Every structure is written in C-alpha cells, then in structure tokens.
Length: 188
Image (cartoon, rainbow, N blue to C red; front, side, top):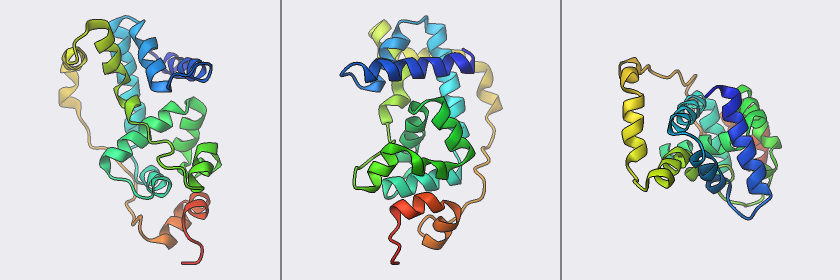
C-alpha cells in the first residue's frame, strides 16, 4: 500500500465516522476488514512507519503538554491520534509539533477536556480487521511475523532529536511557545 492509499483509507474512515454514530477506530477496522489480508499488512507497515517518524522528543513534549504528562504508552496513543487526524495535520505536526496549538481538539483540551488526541484503539486497527476476518485474535500477529521475517535484522536506532526537560517551563515555552501558552500557567 503506497502512502497516498494509506491516507485515503484514513480520510475515508474519518468521513464515514463523521456521518455515522460510530467511532473512527471502529469504522477504520471495518474498512480494513473489507480489504485483502496483504493490504491490511501493508496498511500496518505504513502505519508503523508514520508512527515511528513521530517518535521524537519535540512531539513527545507536545503530548506532555496536551496530556498534562505523557508516559511511554500514552505517547504511543498520542502518535496514533495524530495519524487519525489525517494527512494534513500529520504533516503539520511532523514539521512543527507546536502547530497543534491551532487544532480545535487541543484548544478544547486546554479548557479541561482530557485526553485530546490520545487514541489507543487506532494502534490496533489492523489486528482488529484480521480478527474480524478470521475470528482469531492472534491471526494478525502470526501474519505480521511472517510478513516481516526479512526485516528483523534491519532494526535501526531511532534519532529522537535533542532531549530536554519537559518539566522545565521556560524550556517548554522556548521550544513550544503556542502550546505552552495554552497549557502552562503564565504566573509561574
């Protein structure tokens, strides 16, 4: 599955979810379950590539501000949530995580809504689709293991960029000024 097709899948699921009472992740699973197994694996491969590309300190700092803290698991969910926003927002965030200060859900989160953009279930859409097709919760993981046998030796260390202290308000203001303005107390 090429990158354009991946984003088409995401954006069609967004549109379908917006026109129904179903959650985005549920619509995404159904949509993927209507595709051949190979395409579901290719979707998962693209998802992982995009997900991994957001594994950076500056993106984590944005998640930390928006979520009022952010552990490893939560950061995984945050990156899935950014993908669920669609291609335009994903590309904006990848270029400048501070741009999330303009997203309506983030602005709303600044007013007290919890867990904006943290979307755990999106991480498991491909496995959910496999389970719908096969009735077997482990079918995806077995197929994924076979799909990626050749890649096991090519695991590279990720460059997360420059590490910095998320609890240092002056550093957060310097690096993510728009998000800091929304989420940090200006009187401190």
